[in-house]
Length: 224
Ligand code: HEM
Ligand code: HEM
Image 1 (cartoon, rainbow, N blue to C red):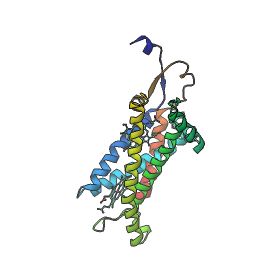
Image 2: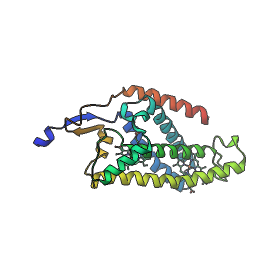
Image 3: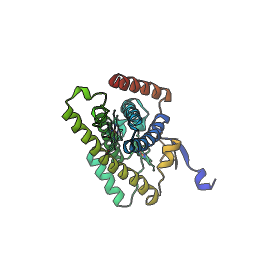
Image 4: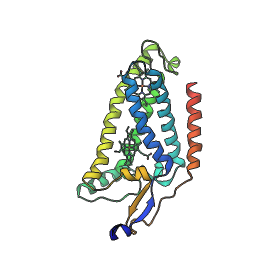
């Protein structure tokens, strides 16, 4: 290890449940795209959709019960804070945040909101042949058709926001020389001691299992 590196302190920034949430979500979204496009895969698409809905519900609970960096109260800031952050970036500065920066916080909310719309409209969707979503009985056929259209349109919006999300991560990597991907995998950041003073509070991963169980039961009751 170089002398410079040995001066750095290791701080835990993302808890295990948040990291698992993220990478399982990425895998499921790829699966959802593939199963939406291929014939005969609708049943898998539906199961995958339930899994996405469960993950998003879990993340909403975790936004209140999780570790500091995962809590909405910590990373959802006003538009003013987000604008100030962008201005600082444009001045060439890179203000340090252990968790999400104020701009990132808004993109996370957008992603979670669009994912909820995607999975939610799926529950009411139909394929005009054999499949009716588990909640399509709650609405008329024309409403179900309309929600199926929203389901298809919203996916394009989702892809756009995901593209912006990945571009932002790459911008940090290539322009700001800050690797955000590694902390999302390992949970840790390596920082100079003066920046590492206030380590975020981490809650037990077992609590994450409880949050997940609540989300599983909620989705199970909804779609049974
Ligand atoms: C299907 C695609 C993706 C979706 C839906 C998605 C969604 C999200 C969400 C919801 C968060 C917030 C995490 C939390 O607080 O719970 C997040 C954060 C993050 N994602 Fe993704 N993500 C996707 C793909 C990727 C990819 C491919 C990468 C890596 C290249 C990536 C890297 C990150 C990083 C580094 C963070 C943390 C950002 C920070 O430090 O503030 N994501 N993502
Ligand atoms: C968040 C997760 C989901 C994603 C990303 C997703 C994505 C998609 C996409 C991109 C399509 C359009 C395919 C096309 O243009 O022909 C589609 C179609 C569809 N999805 Fe989803 N979906 C999700 C969840 C769900 C859920 C939970 C259900 C049902 C319970 C569902 C049921 C359907 C149905 C019935 C169609 C129409 C299939 C057809 O017309 O052939 N989806 N989905």
